[in-house]
Image (cartoon, rainbow, N blue to C red; front, side, top):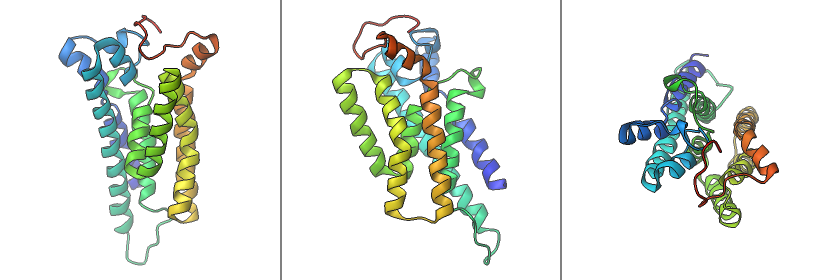
Length: 224
């Protein structure tokens, strides 16, 4: 229980560091959430301020997720292994990484430092995948880039990879091998993350249905 609480706390606090908002405030004395989609993510930063701020936001949001995930795995490994030589933990330390990913994503979308108004968690999920299953992360990245190249709709690519993430993760760990309890835990975590990202894109889904969703490269429109 202690491992779970510490993992969740550190991941939520790290997730609450919104680099999109930090970049907009530090360099532009502005808040990116006042523009475009009202979101604190990379896409809105790109539309509002340009490429360099978007790159900084991407590195920051992916990086905080990697750190949170690695810390979660370290906490699980340290605390669970310290309970005694004869103790056999129910879950492997890697499960701490996936628990951290969930709470980092929660912090990113509902940041305690920024009035509970954050982003949609795609880059956080990317960082988690990069830190835990780089092969699956590469596959998801290729799928995302191909989709965006064809349709120019970033949100659609995000929704697609969110839906595929649990499936690829399950395949990855079935291939790599782990115990049944850890496999179930990991899969449930990934299903929750994927479903949460899709739920956070519900306004985008409605615009996709209406044919009004923003396409990459279009002129900025406020409140979209």
